[in-house]
Length: 81
Image (spheres, one colour):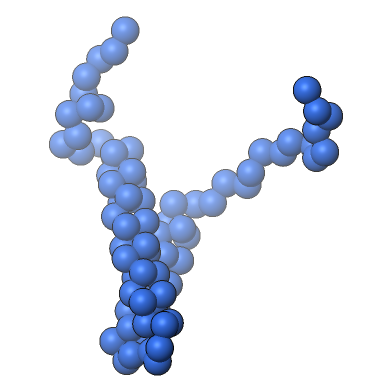
């Protein structure tokens, strides 16, 4: 096995609220640019950014909801051996 080049380090934690706020801000920014319109090939890039931010935000919100009490997620209520 090859010798590791770098010392493996734990990645810093980012608070959930900070991460969601950052993604929401980027989403609004990209949506405004798409709404205004971009010349040439960059319009598709911006539209893809919007879809990516929407998807990321939806996933984060679903993950955030699974950690709260009273969520209706049946997977959390199943006891596993």
